[in-house]
Amino acid sequence: MRLVQVFVPEGDLDLVIETADEIGVDYAVSEETSRGEFEAVVSMPVPPAAVEPLLSALRDAGFDEDSYTVVTAAETIVSSRTEELVDEFVGTRISREELSARAADLAPAASTYFVLLVVSTAIATAGLLLDSAATIIGAMVVAPLMGPALAASVGVVVDDDELATRGVVLQVFGLLASIATAALIGWLLRGTVLLPPGFDVTTVPQVRERITPDLLAVFLALGSGIAGVVSLVRNVGSVLVGVAIAVALVPPAATVGLGIAWAHPTMIVTAGTLVLVNMLSINLTALILLWISGYRPHRGANVDRVYGRIRSRVAVLVVAIAVLSLVLGGVTYGTYQTAAVEHDVQTELATMSDDPAFAELEFREQDVQYELVDVYADNRPVVTVLVERPPGEREPDDFADRVRERLEAATGVELEVIVELVDTRRSG
Image (cartoon, one colour):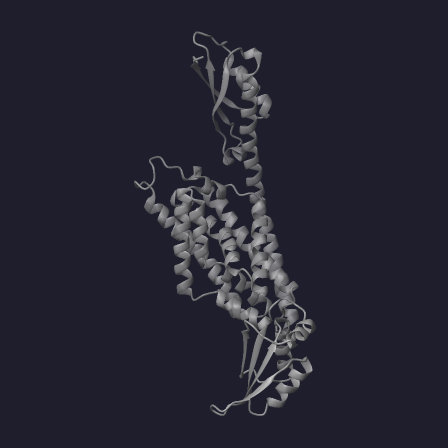
């Protein structure tokens, strides 16, 4: 339930009372005796779904918008009369005015926003380098990215240019600040005793997960946007949804920063694509769902203009996401190819170990050097095979070629095969 309190200027009391009667809500009038600007305060307990019709009716009746109308959430209302009101005003979403206010609150002051973002990025960067999923999740609790992502879409839908611009600016500069923070931390840590000698950032599982994104990442971002809108318009689970959106944005942004610190172009491109797809997808779903939910500018004359703006923005976002998804599709295909080659090599080596044609030889995969860039550069995979043989046994001169031919037949790919032979004696 909500408690709507209207500060009524001199001469407008009858207008407010008539409007309340037309809407069908109960009210109480309190005489105002402060400075003489207002003659009364009208208090009306209403369901959430009745707030927007009530405020719209007051506006249409000519109520002075320079006055005060306060909407507060009522924790508990003890009255059997509320059941009738709830049955009359069916709905679960909050009013347009509450939506705008909450979206504005979710986009904090710039100083607070950037401090929290830098701290969360520092924690997320440490989690990436330490391969600690728990640390990364902890960083998400601090990240304030949900507010700007939703504020931008709310501003467009309700025709609040200031709110929309603020949301976009905070998103863009926030992600740039996140990337710069991670790059600085990576540059400071690189080559220090805090990282092991020969540390390869691309081999860290948490980092690798974000530099080999696939098309499923689009669904994660779309889901985050849907959850964000639902939590906002129904006022549920905003903290958890904020974590979900932060998970989609901060870790890949930090990965881009690490790619800059390590001067690794592939990291920058793949993780950067993931960041952009996530950010655009969240904004796209927020725009569409807010409009479908029925939110419109309070001035009817502006509806067509706002609808045109939304259509153009949705078109731009869809095209941008589609183009970026081609990159994700390429990464998905390349990742599949590298995994398929490694899997086929492992399977065939196991088969060769059981093949009587190779007598007592045991084949072990030592290493498969086949990265995403090799798929598109048309570089042959380099497979190192460790072969255990009984002491004194000799292998044919063409043994390495025979191993290569078997593996090429299994993988369907031309390979460069290195065979390492080891004399092995096992105890009974």
